[in-house]
Image (cartoon, rainbow, N blue to C red; front, top):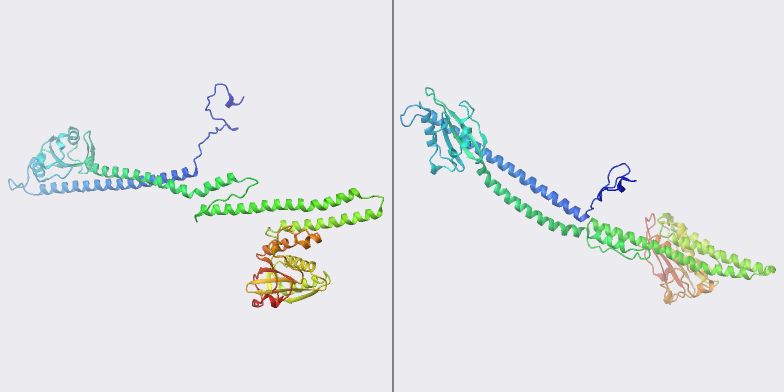
Length: 511
């Protein structure tokens, strides 16, 4: 039986891992809470470090000021010893007189007191009205002072009693010829000196806590605003389903998170286009292949195997439909790969030679008067094979919709920073209501219906132009020029190698 399932085991016993290391469930904080915690912790540490450092420096400065005052007290006492007794006018011969004169000359400051000891007993102290600290009233301090040996060095020391903490200096006084030993003591109430400093830093602490509260509130809203694109991203991705990729994140800022939201929106655009292309491809394949399959199946079911003519006719029809299906599949594959980065492979191409090659191939299509009306003798970056495929498709359309013996013109020109490749026929043209729809997949004009076209030729041309960052459009020449229609491949003249761009000419001149 596993240890976690033992009878009598506490309900909150952690489940062991296979190695015996317990696994504990930890509460996961949100990004907002973690950022807010980090801000508060860092701000609190900053306040504490700054306050603690300032307090330590101020305390050290206070101790230094006290020690300087104690050093001056020692100097004043030594100065008294060096002078004459003001009563007798002679040098001091009594320790008691020195102590008395030292106390008389000492005016204690704030939180300062003085006292003298003679042979370990308290002797003199300043007048009550001149002092704020009564050293003689603290018995613990008196005990400590009585224990100081007569030859002890005169150095500042700290003494802690139940009353307060003192910072003091004890100066031994001894004179030749006087067996007595005296002790001159000057002390500061260090706790009182520090109380004002502590009060200041208590106020600082209160202000620091209030500042942290304000920082917490401001940080809560600021972090929430900064993380708003993340929340929108989460909510949007939850609403996205396999059949609906239309949701987008609303972006208003210009920071990194807003850029992330824009990137996700762009990714969703690509996914939507990809899924849309897949659905279109499946719909197109199902729609277009169903008819030839039905035709082939119907004829195969009705063929008379004993009639050679019927078998040959059915065979020819089936092969014709299979060829049409093959062309359809090839066209669909071309359209399906049109969005891939490697659909076109740009290379320097001689546009003049490309024009002549297309013209030579066009002459094999049928009885038409094929004319190169314009030739651009420049080298431009483009995919020669794809452009040839698109241009020949326009040429094939011109052949299909024009009468035998009519003229079909084609040409290439550089107009500004654009490369124009065009084909003009003398056919019936394109009805105005179909001019915007002929580049859609499986859209068939009246002639397409007659010739059983699949409606993929011009969409392939549009896809090739789009892959070159260009476009294809249709125009009708002016009435005084004649009938027909003009199809134009408008491409960027990328990396023009040689040749000067030709001026933009009127359509009537080169058509």
